[in-house]
Amino acid sequence: MSNNITPTDPAIETRNGVIYAVSAYVMWGFAPIYFKLLHSVAASEILMHRIVWSSIILFIIVILSNKWRLVQALIAQPKMLLRLTMSALFLGANWFMFIWAINSDHLLDASLGYYINPLFSVALGMIFLAEKLRKWQWFAVALAIIGVVIQFIALGSLPIISFALAGSFGIYGLLRKQMHLDSFVGLLVESMLMLPIALIYWWFFVDSSTANMLHNTSNLNITLMMAGVVTTAPLLCFTSAAKRLSLSALGFFQYIGPSLMFILAVVFFHEPLQPAKIVTFIFIWLALLIFSVDSMRARRKKLALANA
Image (cartoon, rainbow, N blue to C red; front, side, top):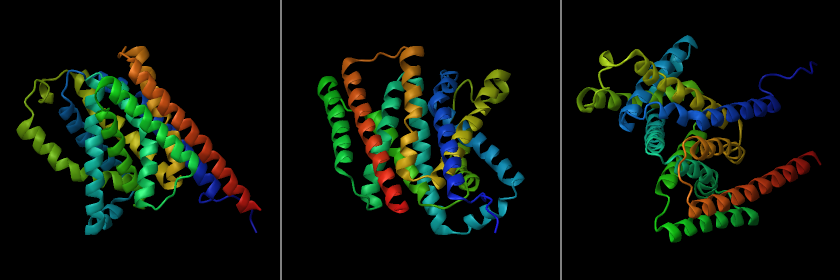
């Protein structure tokens, strides 16, 4: 009997999942640099380009990969199409809010949102997947809530942008986790579902100096078209990771993206870091540290029991 490890070996799948997760979050972490190049273009117009060029890139990838039959099979399933329509709505909303936050100098709020997201995913797991929190996880969630309350008391407002980003992407991740689809095929169908709206918006509603690409400089057009690459590459990595890793493990790697965003916001884009926001970040970081340590301990205990 051969002892060779096959491509479907759990260890290889987990390793590949880690690689995909790190790649996705590093790309997302540096994405604000790209969108800052388009600060003169409206967020809705950038979103339109993201949808259009992502659809084209994904279509080419699916055709070259001989996966079009999978798309046809998926389109023939009304229930799956409905679920993908829901995930596409949350994905499109997240794209728009992320672009707006960056180009409106709210990158710190975006960073906080993606720090909150793993804890939000835990809440979704409790509600929809019947997962139970351990005592240290409850403590971590309580710390996060305290941090948000402190900001509310000090500034008189809740971090709505942060909550919206965390909520929309958390729900998107939950929906995609429950759909066992090929990464390319699922993203293509989601993009195709958004494409008619994007094209109608481009044709009838966009009224800006950059709307007609024939009048733009080649550099601007290339930058707009690169929205497809900037959008598609990390999402493909994310959906590939989501199929190979647990929701809690996937959430652990999500700290990479907001950490890079935080550094970019403070060091390179010089966004003001108010004392109340610093306190909120400290509470969130502490909550995530406790949550991560507890998760690692629980995973080790589970492995020890399995090998006993």
